[in-house]
Figure 1 (cartoon, one colour):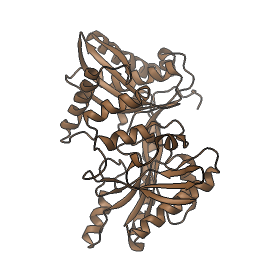
Figure 2 (cartoon, rainbow, N blue to C red; figure 1 turned 45 degrees about the vertical axis):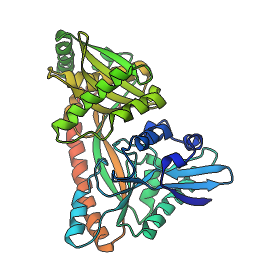
Figure 3 (cartoon, helix red, strand yellow; figure 1 turned 180 degrees about the vertical axis):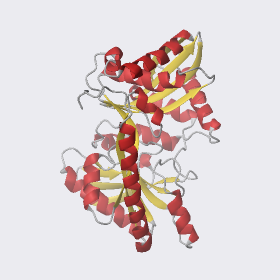
Figure 4 (spheres, rainbow, N blue to C red; figure 1 turned 135 degrees about the vertical axis):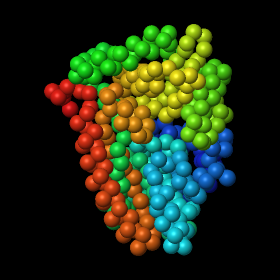
Amino acid sequence: MRTQVVERLDAIDGAQWDALEHHGYPFLRHAFLSALERTRCIGEGTGWSPAILTLQDDQGLAGAVPAWLKTHSYGEFVFDFAWAQAYSRHGLRYYPKLVAAAPFTPATGPRCLVRPDLDREFVVTQLLASLGEYADEQQLSSTHVLFPAETERSLLERRPDWLMRRDCQFHWRNRGYADFEGFLGSFTAEKRKKARRERRRVAEAGITFESRRGSEASPEEILTAWQLHRITFLRRGNEPYLAAETFLEIARTMGESLLFKFARLGDEIVAVAVFFVGDDTLYGRYWGCNENFHSLHFETCYHQGIEFCIEQGLDRFEPGTQGEHKVSRGFEPTYTYSAHRIAEPRFRAAIADYLDRESEAVERYAAGIAEHVPYRQNLEA
């Protein structure tokens, strides 16, 4: 197999890229990454320069790692700012670094894409080795694989040159619920009453909900969704990662994977939650509103998402990072992982020690949170 590093996604044939196994993960489809590239969310001047590692054989594209040369650590959701500061204090250069990830997406998924007719473990092993070799050739400080799927994580854990990092998110699992009331029936009486009260408050405010796939939404609705989600970012002092043109492009090219939940008060859209739909998982990505309504955030982002999963028979709902408030709505602590290859031996040793202590703290945190899930104790795992 021949290795090549590609600096533009559009230089790769979209059909060959999508023929690699993505396991229903929408954020590495050619259409998604191409939309980011074409609307200049990634590429020159953004700090996300494509360095896509590919393997070619006589039949074409055999495997790939969507990797990026990063000149900062924003949009990754695995925080290494302190590592960069430590490098700087010692007169060393941390950036650029090499990151294998779905840009702006804190969701677990495949990071090594392999053609289905090939031996996956063999190709993944080659891809990971080539990733390290490229980083060494470029004299990069570090290489990072963020939110890898379990099969890749197990291979990374076997490699002595990679350090593993663990974090905690809150995910929902579908235990075969017939409807939302059946889901609430698994709660303790107190938590069930609270969830019903939240939903009732939103209904009593006169708010109704409409679902739109990206392919169904009008351009005006899509732009409204973008403006509302931008409000959330501006409240935190930042512009959003994705441009309005990105929303429109994704809706055009992969509309069935994009879902808007619009909250309406009369004829006005007052809030929206933006989701992506995988083969068996719903991914919560963005939220925005133009007024403050009691419990509207919980209803739009969580209850509506869970209801959609039950209706569509989806197994999981990953609503994004952070938020212990998700636990009382039925989300459970779930470990996520990243892998880090640190070139400088002294920093590698220091970071390895830090990650060991951090992992213990994350385990204690997850165990403590798990004691507060709303489910009855006799609920089957």
